[in-house]
Image (cartoon, rainbow, N blue to C red; front, top):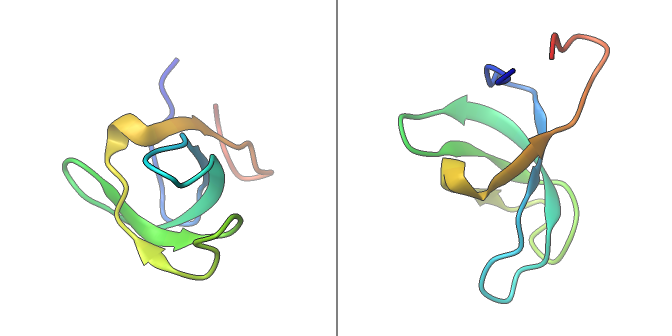
Length: 66
């Protein structure tokens, strides 16, 4: 079952280039990427727009329905 992304979701973003796998909180959802902030790793606190293909998984929260 595919999870419908929502603002506030916390994702695991796959490692890319020299950036290791990290947690990312969604603030906006676009057609081909999500906007938000890295929570962990070297980009923690920085805004980014990773492509949807980089989403490894959505972390469950008490409000998610996966």
